[in-house]
Amino acid sequence: MYDLIIIGGGPAGITAGIYAARKKLNTMLISKDFAGQAGNAFWVENYIGFKEIRGLELMKKFKEHLEKFEIDIAEFEEVEEIKKVKEIKKTNSIRDKSLNGESGFFEVRTDEEKYSAKAVIIASGGNPKQIGVPGEKEFLGKGVSYCVTCDETMVEGKIAAVIGGGNVGLEAGLELAGFCSKVYVLEFAPKVTGDEILQQAIESNKKINIIANADVKEIRGDDFVKEIVYEDRKSKKIIRIAVDGIFIEIGAAPSVDFAGNLVELNKAGEIKINPRTCATKTGGLFAAGDAADIRDKQIVIACGEGAKAALSVYEYLKKLK
Image (cartoon, rainbow, N blue to C red; front, side, top):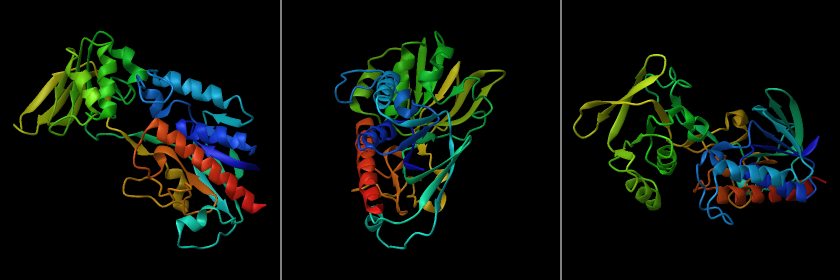
């Protein structure tokens, strides 16, 4: 029986692990990888202490820091279900449920094993959102990708398209410009919505062509992607662009299905938490990072939320003694 199980190996989960270990909690961290969305970032320029660092390198440093502490790690395992064993008390306040010393423990089942703990932190981040057009699923791994860092070499010296004009999409476009002969960035809205500094970098890069008001309709090819088809939302014309690879970068949806009715979700599918303690509606169950209903999805914020959740778990467990 662990004191704490942490689900997720991103910034929130790793920080929670470090804080839990420092509090001498018997902790297990379960993660299918130690990259996540942060690891997919080409350059990170807004994490304190690093003027500029690649996302994968930053996550490597996070993991190395974690491994300095006594903590069990189940890597390459994916959580499928969480259960709360024993009855819990009813209360109408999320805040009341955060540290009320309720009895019971949790069973966490993965695709390989089953673990138990007195408390759980969900820091599972999110999964890439899909656009839901013909050809998207058919050409996944055959020119369609949700991870530039993973698959950029497949379009080296070729033409690529990025779907999405937010921060993630613009970062992807800039990264691909270092590999490709040409990059199209397609945005559904009348203009891209990423940060000004990213927009300026995109505009100054001659390899990148922004296409706004683009409603993607289909992805076509034979054995591999050949073209992307979109409708110009202003002219209503159907336009085809020959491309060698397509990267879908429209954000992520929280990965929390395994929590079932132990949590309450908002309209975006994020876990509702007490912002002071990271507590969910179930005593002993906490959430942090992009899986929770925090306003801004940033690495530094996820780290802070992970620390907060671990400290709340420590207080919760003291009340169980």
